[in-house]
Image (cartoon, rainbow, N blue to C red; front, top):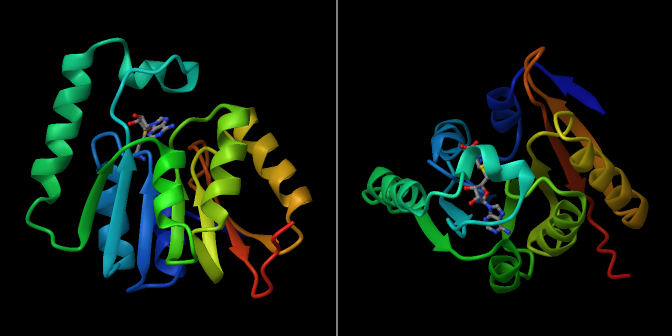
Length: 186
Ligand SMILES: C[S@@+](CC[C@H](N)C(=O)[O-])C[C@H]1O[C@@H](n2cnc3c(N)ncnc32)[C@H](O)[C@@H]1O
């Protein structure tokens, strides 16, 4: 596993001009970095923008539906002129179902950070990424649940390899798993 100094550095290391999805968008700040660093030809932005009982998102979402509606509007306004961007307002697993089939070069997970949800996201989105592509996510070290889910997923999937950890010292880090050429359908 290779360490990179920042998340933008990771994005610049991953395949450029590809098809990318970010799962968990909130205000679109990371999506803007993805667009700048990876220059994707298509970027799917997946978020349900709704209240959930999830302690790992509570600080961000609160219980305020007006704030959530405003976050969604902000993303729509921010990217409406960018024809590469497709906003998918729906749950992560539903979106993964509709994008299944190895379309993506890179998928970046930053939705729920609960163990069960992260593991489900990794499983579901791994089938949306092409062989040789990357399944990535945020908060690898920040939430123990994320780390545990990634470790469990790697045990299940010998065709996936942990290639990068990226982030500045003292900041939450991202991980990148390469889906190797041979597909594992176990
Ligand atoms: C940490 S924020 C994303 C921040 C964003 N990636 C960034 O760095 O700018 C998490 C987002 O995930 C969304 N989310 C949480 N669980 C989800 C799920 N199951 N399906 C879709 N979106 C989800 C929340 O609505 C919230 O906007």
